[in-house]
Amino acid sequence: MRQTTMLLMSATLLASLAPIGCAVARDRSDHSELTASQMTDRADVRTAKLKVDLNLTADQEKNWPAFAAAMQDMNTKQANRRVGLRDARAQQHGTPDALDDMRKRADFQIERSNDLKKFADAAQPLYGSLDEQQKSRFALVLFGGERDAR
Image (cartoon, rainbow, N blue to C red; front, side, top):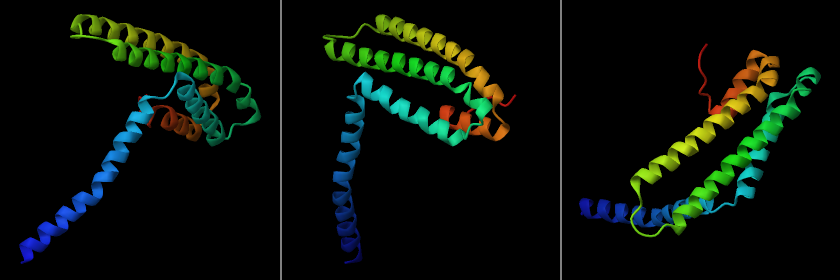
């Protein structure tokens, strides 16, 4: 009797979680269908939140416009590349060419690397003006806390 009750409870629990799993999958598919503009808008909101979180001084504020413009440019390029890749995959027919995919991935990484270098150069004046607490917050927001300990 006890085993039957446990099995019944487990089955009920699993059945109640099924709609949640579908909602999570639907959320992921909705996210992948964002337009480049929507992705850029979301990134702009995160950039604006970063500015508020940093609580910049008047001197630091002078370095913000160049940083924000570089951030927006990098995010726009990344969003356009993602949409381009998604569209290319959707239009692909037949067996994918593994070597062509490898070349495209390498080109994507080269472009991304170049964008990151430009962004780092543009961000340097702002970053250099931040105190240690602001630098920590900056790294946490932009890189999820992953920063080289130098």
